Amino acid sequence: MKITKIIAMALAGFIGIMSIISGSLVLLGIREVGYTVLTGLVVYNVAVGVLSVITAFLIWKHFVLSKKMIFLILFFHGFVLIYLYFFSETVAIESIKAMTFRVVVWLLIFLLIQLKLTKKTNSSKT
Image 1 (cartoon, rainbow, N blue to C red):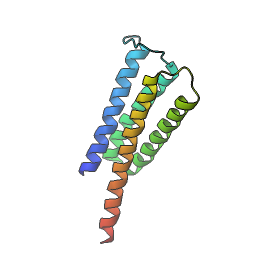
Image 2 (cartoon, one colour):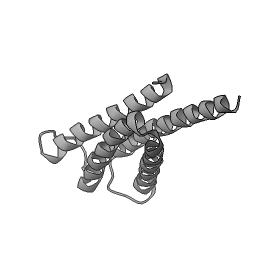
Image 3 (cartoon, helix red, strand yellow):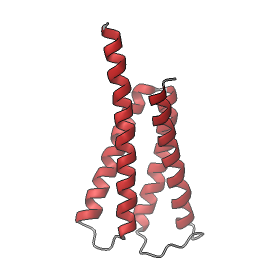
Image 4 (cartoon, rainbow, N blue to C red):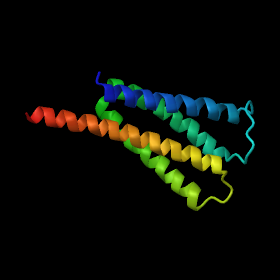
């Protein structure tokens, strides 16, 4: 397995597991945070965390399908970030920072996969 694929898989798996654990702790009331929690946003983060772990597996096993999942997750995170930033008046700054972090990580994953595709396409032409 190429290093770009391994890095993309590790990032997707790590951010997914992180989202599942931290979101579940908040939803179950085990972890208290010092700001207003939007329950819908936490549920979204846990759900997309599960999709992230599935995507990490797909990067390893079913590369073509993983490209679609990566784009979909990046799109959803970008959409939610725009919504939180421009349209939600009750959102905590921590939520915007966390979503920005997710967008940056998924953009990096997207670019790593694109880099792998570009290298693969160029090597098949020679």
